[in-house]
Image (cartoon, rainbow over all chains, first blue to last red; front, top):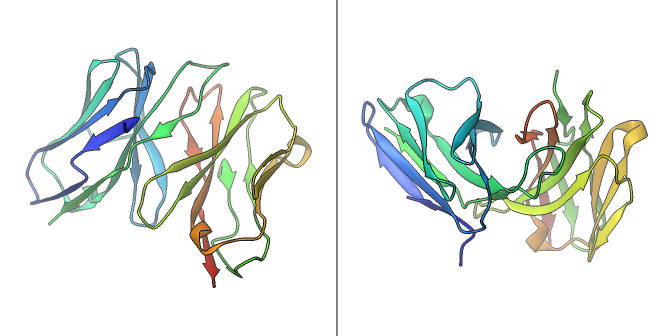
Length: 115
Length: 115
C-alpha cells in the first residue's frame, strides 16, 4: 500500500485552465503538506495543514487553493494555470508538531505541464 | 540567507568509490531536525534519515553513514562502496522550531556513479 498517494501523476493542460491534484495518506498522520519542485530541482513548501487547519501558507499566488476535507486528504486546486506553474508538485505528511516531529514522507509527485 | 547549503552541485565517481555529500545549515533555534532525501531518476523523494539537534551521534545504515557536527553546523552523508543504483539527486533539509514543521531544502547534489 502506498503511504502517500497523489493523483494524477502526469497532467498536461492548457494555459487558463483550472486543475486539481489530489493527495491521500494512510499513515494516520496529522500534518500534510504541498511542496513544489521547479525545473532546477529546487524544492519549496507551499502549504501545510495540521488536523485540517492551515498552518503554513508561503508566498503562493492565490490561484492556488489547498483544501483538506479530513486529516487524510489534502487537495491542491489551481485556477487560471500559467506557463510558470509547470513543475512537480509533491504531497507529504508527518505526525506531530515541534518539538516532536516525525519523519516527513513524500508522495511520488505530480508532473504538471502547462502549454 | 540560505539556510541549507549543499555546495557540491554535481559529483561523479566510479563504482566502489566512497563519496561524501556535504550539507551545511544555518539556524538560530536550539531545537531543529535535519533530513536527507534521495531523488532517483524516477522522480520520487525517498526518505533516508532524520536527526534531531540533541542527538549528535553519527549513524550508519549499511553503506550509508551520516556525520552530524553541531560545532560546524554540518550534516554530511557518506556512501561507502558506491553503486550505480546510488545515482540520484540527494537533498539535505532543515526543519526549525520557528518555521513550524516545514522543510527547508538545500539545492541538492547530483551524484553520478559510473560502472
